Figure 1: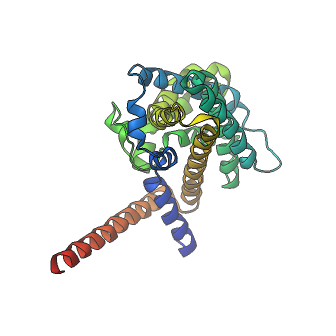
Figure 2: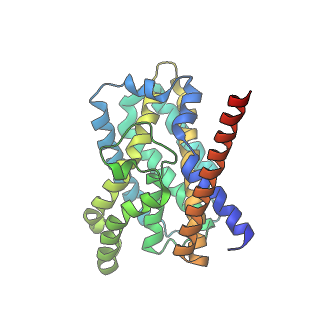
Figure 3: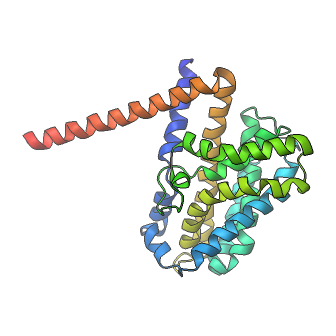
Length: 283
């Protein structure tokens, strides 16, 4: 692998394995996001999970089916602005606006993700590329703050997430390869959407918890959504960079390099920690 590509891969690994939306939200609202989530009524976790699934289905219905349209240039700045405005509404009306705000935000985010995919050479006429766009919602990055019911869904490794989604993606691909991508295919895609939403519902819960705080309001509500879409744009850039490298070098080589980078990073951190411990002991 060329040095430039290896450096790009190392940066992608850093983004996918270390970027943490919960930490950014905690800094913005001035308290641990877990505390904000604890303030939500207990039944809201089920509501958020259901609304997340519905939001992805609506985004799929209104955005993914028309992603073969080719814009003149990427519009990620416009997408970020629109999602920010949506967040202002969420900040003003709190979790009661979830049913309206979340599907809108998810649709705009999917459009933004598609723009990023195009920039990395994805052919959005291909089903695999369309599904790769939806997969980005499952890439939460870093460790989740709320444990999932599924140990697979809670796994934070990039390739573990892709493996987790492979079966559902395979079933979807096989069916649509025969019947085509249309709204009639939607029932077959439910398993895949559910697999994605199982992971996406965690950061959505964190976002809703932050926006529901009385101290947040409309302005900070927009900031929450700004952090939200910027996080997933970052995940999308890393994801599609890796996919472009896989097309260039082969998936096995890229995956091996990815794991080697993680091992190297862990070794560096371990050595640094041991050195600090040694210095403290001898001081």
